[in-house]
Image 1 (cartoon, protein in one colour):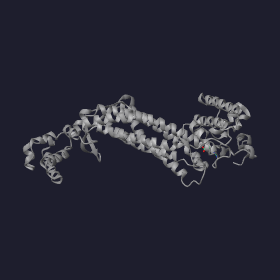
Image 2: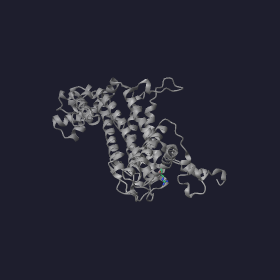
Image 3: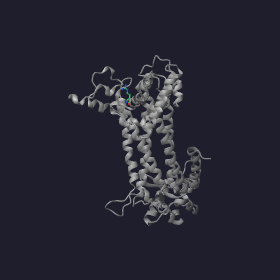
Length: 472
Ligand code: ARG
């Protein structure tokens, strides 16, 4: 693109145009501009500029009157952008220069004083930290809402027996409540990771200027406090160049997305015709354009699928940052889109999961029937032989194997065998054994800490409401 027609005039980028005879080539403008996406940070950008202007006045670096003019101009711009009346310009590259340019149109030369003792490098690092902090806070609320729905269903189904699986093979009976509570714990740790990320993120880069700090007598504590940061970042080069807070955000997000994908996958399985444990309400089911009988859990499949883009975002930013020399490099402009996309994606996934769960009816009879199949209480039998008859576990395992074989040959469940059948294998067995056979008995007996007994699940639900929902 050497054709002169492709080159806009130097004034187009007047903020740094002073040194340049000609404006950038069209393709440079296209690759450089981030305004199409970073306009999402306008509230953060304006808040940071207001804090900076007030601090400059408090430090007598600019006059109080100028600071007032700047702050009220910025408030006007915030209103314009909020109501969609703002003309964004690609030639002005990003949100920072778009706002500053509009400010000078509104208040004239005074606008030029705002960028004293500041650079776009500390500005963008500040805005982005504020944006990710807001995203973490939003997602925390969504995660909490999902936990609330999980807890409601877990409470309802504290005593609903279902098969528990390992290798997706029926292993031991559990309660649906216990199964759902596993996800309450997972999301609880996700919230913990988000909170950890927020703590490390919450320091202010503002005042680091381009990379080396500034000769102006600024007050970095004041701007940090005004923006809700815990403290100013200690090293100006670190402050403008690291994006580890964004990586931590994406890492937390990836683990959350993986958890949600597992829950989504279980939904797909439970809603399948073969399992038929769960039935999604009409609002969350989709039909097929060709097969009228279909009722598809599309939203669950999409939650499962969207984990791919979230994990991809983490990878993409890790690769952007790998090997970058100190300090700021334009590569770092690639940090925002993955985070924006991930925040939107997860907010959608969390809302969809909560909606689906709330709208699901479980077929309790069918699950209970399944729970009793496949000699799922064989471990209970073996445990009884150890507990009551004092057999070594290995011997009990062997005896149980023989009894399972017997039931298999007779084509019945363990609880359908007679006492005589069982005594033929192990003479010491008494009719007390029947109390542990059968799925209901099995789950009721698992009262160990963290176990599936309905009473334990009800306790776990009550405790989780306190821990996660700040209830009573
Ligand atoms: N739009 C840029 C970004 O997102 C802002 C910082 C630009 N700084 C610079 N020195 N060119 O990274």
